[in-house]
Length: 356
Ligand code: PMV
Image (cartoon, rainbow, N blue to C red; front, side):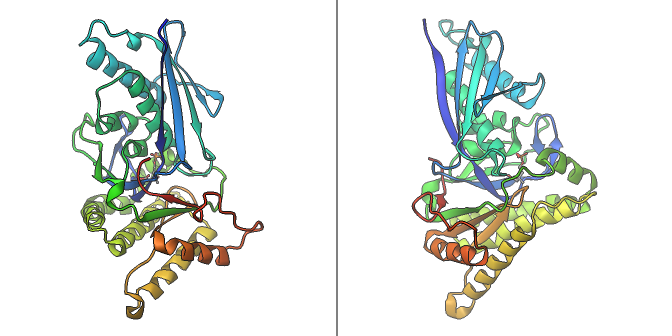
């Protein structure tokens, strides 16, 4: 008897231009375009195995070994249904000899190799790996950009994790969402020298989920409207140009400004949302001072690091590899740990950029 099974993995991505706000909550269509870097090494990945079998009674999902309910009409159910529809349309309707996998139930098991609650974008890698795994199981002829339309309906930021390197998620204009997809701005090989240093300030689950936080911001923040219309479109162009030119100084300037505006928009929400804490803000101060000194004419005049924060207190610091050692020494000096700093990944705990 044939066994229909496929395993794939997808990494997390960290946005430089933040997605914050939905114009359609069911299709997950954003209020602005966003741009991220997909982290390429093995430390921050979701790996998902899917199996289709005529004897399975219903679709089931296990996350890190624990079964999760697939709520009917929920995001997980939507992604699975969309992928089954594509299997039928693109494979079974075209080839009568193809097994009718779209009619079988699926069992899906997904593992994160990092703490799910640590505020490190596990939903992005999770929905990307799920989409890629079912697409492989169903032998879909779809491109990663085609699949981004499906992963987007699981978790918006997941659409960017289907591609490696520097990835834009276009806001799109169509009501159907058909043009709200992820495209690669540059592959990881274009600029492999950029590293991401992740500083876990707190590994407890965040207080306000991105879904409810976004809704509240869309409903109440005048600053969000300004950001959508007058800030993000130009920033998308500027950061894409900086990436293509490998201009780290400009990349850092835009990345930090956008992180700060995202957190300003959260603060402009009623009631306000605070994602960063005092340690997060102190890390900003350290990196700003590091850059101020680096920008002095006698030191080369250019920024050497960029911080960015998602919907939580943890810092991601982007920097060219030559600066990473110095940045880690600074962080360890200003934020001494009870335990001595361990170097779990060999090269000072950094994750390189790009898809593996
Ligand atoms: O995809 P979600 O619902 O987890 O939202 C992610 C939002 C941010 O991480 C704050 C920004 C982004 O673009 O990833």
